[in-house]
Image (cartoon, rainbow, N blue to C red; front, side):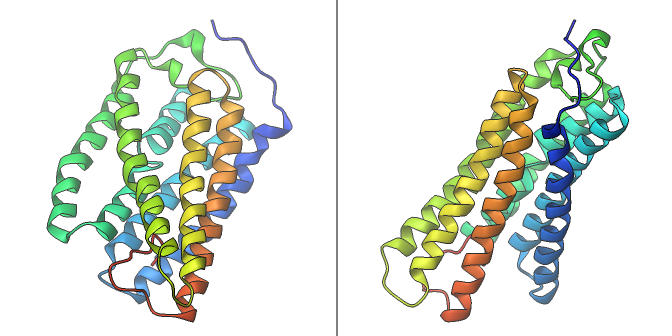
Length: 245
């Protein structure tokens, strides 16, 4: 049986993360509305919104207590849809439209299928903690073996794409290129931090996930803002890709 953990200050951090995510998602989606056809912005907006949904559920658990329904919803929103839409946004930015559409047709049904399996999974009653969510409640343990593959896919495109863009801009000379390199580096760091926290959460340290989510969204937003400011200085260079274009 999982040991009960009392509410600590760190359990309230997801409230702040949720507020930041709502504001950030609104900014991205408004930019998408102004630039119809930029599907990477749509996916990023959905990704930040899903990220915020996961932290909103964490906030609800802290404030009102945990239930099996909330923990399953948290697992779907966070572990499955938290980083995937952000990665798909980068897919649409870096790759040809046909390739991006193909990857979406392959990966999205898998995400949806795993989400359904999470919803249908029997639960382990003794694993439910009153104020902390945990994937250990899932009776079908093999479902948890699938999430690392989803997370690896997200890391490859979200973090890898930011690193690639930052490297390209760092090698070029021009107005704003240095800022774009810095901005993409911040986005890469922001993409890694929640993953580190998620790994520690699997070991029972959910509080590390809360910190990783908060600092992660701050880094991604900061990187996005730096790139936006750089774009006001100069037009994007041919052959280089902005993570936050």
